[in-house]
Length: 69
Figure (cartoon, rainbow, N blue to C red):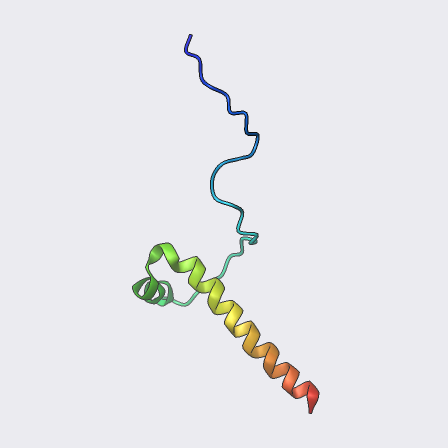
């Protein structure tokens, strides 16, 4: 029987959690291809997360400006 070493470290290996929630977003035809052309297919989710954060900040700032008037 082959003996496999058992790690003394109980922590899991791999990437740390991103602390994100999966969500389905439907995009118009051609939009995913345009994103991929700019940032590459492996960076699509990161691009969308950043774009959402930027737009949320813009709209929240706009809402704050209206509330102060």
